[in-house]
Image (cartoon, rainbow over all chains, first blue to last red; front, side, top):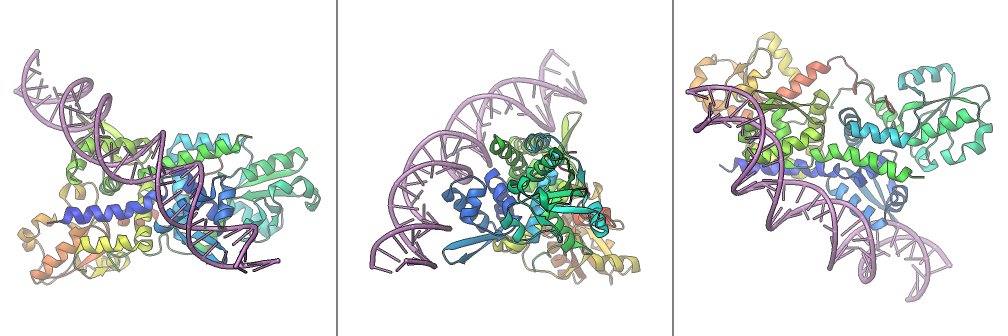
Length: 228
Length: 228
DNA sequence: CAAGATATCAATTGATCGCTTGAATAACAA
DNA sequence: TTGTTATTCAAGCGATCAATTGATATCTTG
């Protein structure tokens, strides 16, 4: 009975995907890819690591089935393999935050002084009423790869220069990559310094997108059958 | 600006949990714990590895926040830290199956010849009509830690001896740990050999339990705020 | 074709991981 | 107390991993 051997092989295969999420560098790449497809060089720059290392990790992610790759002329465009992978990453991130004090500490240290947040559902109704101005403070290429409908693209670096675009009395809501991204918090603090009323969205574009794709769907789209 | 350092620390902290899912041995332990709490020795026996190694991995899982531990006299009882962790594990498992051909191959090799499966929703309505006899072919201690209401516990090892407990003409449905567990498939094949009509449930107790806990709830129970 | 940009490969290093072994600790029972 | 059982600790060794470096392939453009 080689059932032990077969079982080992099964868990080993699953662990191939688990390993994809076991390195901080790879997680950062996944987090960036959650905003939209990117080339190797862009990812390397955004994650401040060498191109070679980035490429190496991306290949690892590819053989783990976590990202797709296609060539576009001289460059290679990587993307998350699907919404299920995005969901998995967000789940890992959120659960690690609730279960590991270390994560919350690190998040607090990275985000800086806490700013007031607004929940997605509340923002939705405010948007319908036209109560708020919504700004996307991510880099422009991420905005272009996908953004919340009705949002204004104001990359965090340009914020001060574009205060004029924002109606004086309006309440402003800023969002960025997600709850652990510092852009929105930073934007809110700077807006406050400029005398504006502002809050951050407690989520990012990926969460928003998933929430709208999933609306009215099953939790896990039909568990995988025993084989199929 | 030490923001790079802070960001690294954050991803490194999240990767602590990712690493928990990066080893086949640990995944097997998680899979066993998904059936219910167990002691170190039981887990070591069930996963066919040394007690020392099992203990070591369990400690790793504990510091990763994936399992809880409490002492009961001379033994230590480990359990999954929560339903969110269970959900994460099932998601990783299912996604790896859809994205990695290797996983499906290994699953096929382990499960043996495919048997006909029945979906959870179909089983639910059959149960209401009293159409089927449902048997739980996991080891008895797992049945006792939790099982589908109305199921009969017939550990796979005792199946032949207890054929008499099963009404002759009835359609039988067998379930076990999950879609990648071999017990149910094996049970169905043996029941067929005994001239019975049988199918396997395409999921296991953990999936069933989660589906019933989740019924009528939000997808992800309130994404973690930026800090909270 | 040659030049330039993008991505990957190959080889190396130090660090970490996974498992084994044998001893140590803790709770309990006789 | 002594013995027994369950778990953890500590040391060690081979295997794997992460990052660097420098070279190589591939596509585009002039």
